[in-house]
Image (tube, rainbow, N blue to C red; front, side, top):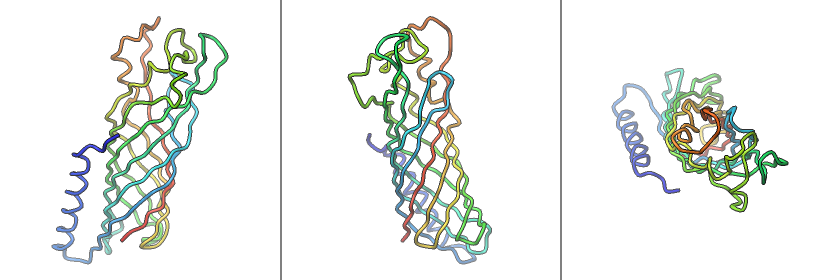
Length: 225
C-alpha cells in the first residue's frame, strides 16, 4: 500500500509549524524527531463475525514538542502498520469452522497530548488519529470461497472491501528517558470499519447490518534525535 501524499505532507507541515512556534516562544521548548517501531495485536469488535486477534507490526516517525514549564508535552505521529486478524469460516455452509487469516495495511496520523505523571519519565498519552487502510487481504487465496460462520452464502472474499477512511482514538503510557521511550498504546476505532459492506449487494437472506470497530494494542520503542 502506498502512503497517501497528503498524509506525508501534513506530517511535514505540522513539524515545520512546531519548530517555528518553538523559536518564537517565551520559554524553553525542545523539539525532537523520533523513529518508532514495534508489534501490534489487532481485532475487530463485531457481532457479525467470530474473530480472533492476531499479531502484526508497526513503525513510523514522530515530531515531539517538550514544553518544559507545562504539565504536558505534544507530539505528531505518522505510522504504517500491517495488522492481522483471523475470522471463522468453513469450506461449506454449516460445516466445521476454522480461522481464516487476513491482513490489513494501514497509514495513520495522530496528534497526542502527553500528560506528565513523573516528569518526562512517565506520561499518560491521549489523542485523535486519522487512518487510511487497504482491504482485508486473504493470506491464503485458496480459502476465498469459504463460508463465513453463521452465514449461508457470505464468503471469505465477500468481506474484504472494508471502509478505507477511519477515525480512531489512542490512549496509553510512555516510559523512559529523553532519547529512548517504551510506549504501550491502545487504539479504538470510533467509525464503523465494516460500514462499506452495507453498500454492497451480498445477497444475504436477512437485513442484518454490518457493524464493527477496530481494536488495536501496540507496543513500541521510540528513539529520538
